[in-house]
Length: 394
Image 1: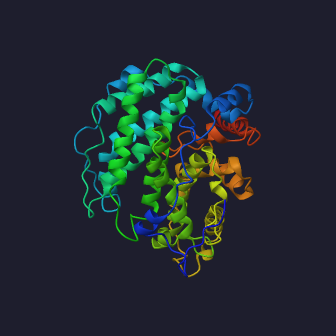
Image 2 (image 1 turned 30 degrees about the horizontal axis):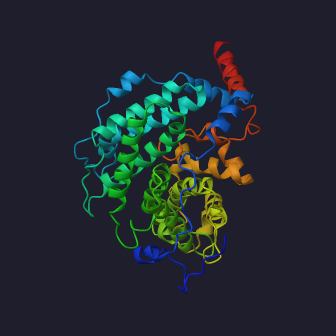
Image 3 (image 1 turned 90 degrees about the vertical axis):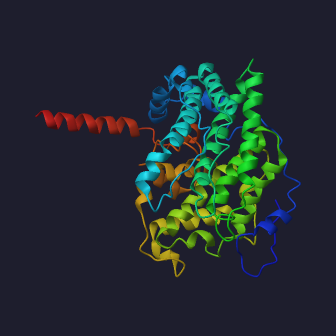
């Protein structure tokens, strides 16, 4: 794909007006049934692999949840109000539990279908989403520019639903009414949510825009909505325009001690978005804007993980590192590693696997990991645990 040259002398994230001026007419949905990975190819691989890590995770997922119990979960059809995370993280977690439960549910049903090939879980996912669609759930969320948390929270619910749904929908038969209902609901949700532009040089264009772009791309593909699809594609152009010569996202560097976290957080949504776009036949991973590709952002993230002084004067070198303890923040790495053999990522992922993110990708290790990787991890962990128990009994 040809490079895009921007007129600005210094790279910066595109404004709303600049994004809207992009000619993205070449981007159209080519395959509405293409999920973010080849589902049947992966199922076939899982049936043949002897990789103990993959076998263990598949075995754990094969006996999935009860559909009857899941259908009893009440849809969120009242107004959703969520307190801010940083001012009050404890209250945020409590209030957010029903939202997390929704994301866990759709991810688990999709994962159980891939692991078991039992259409029961695929049909259950459609029934579950149809129940929420019939209730017009998630359409009513409180939003003020000073209180955007419900807007933020519903972002991930939309792409969690859409990505899980994309795994199962092509194999569903005899549920045309339910599928039409779910498709219509997701499309309405995506348009209503994306119509909120966000604040200039902030939520209009930073990681929250990348989150909105992820659901726009996934729902755009599912519903053959080129407007949504191009909204999702525009985030890649904007993100690349925001890169410094080193590969840092300028808007994420504004987060100070959390600059490393937000460089990674941006990739958490950009990489699966690019995977979806690539699955539609576009060479998006090689897109250049001002001479930069997404690989520059990936390399810079790995650099500052290893040595925060690589941040230079863009952010403090005493960085928050708590996110390294949570595998969900690195689900993008499984997707990226499936396409590009990055030794540093391979090393980084080993202690984290199996990686799971209930919204941005679900059971990504199950879906993406090369079976030749970590062949003996589960065996070694079991042997170590047995040795520990033996020591305790002596």
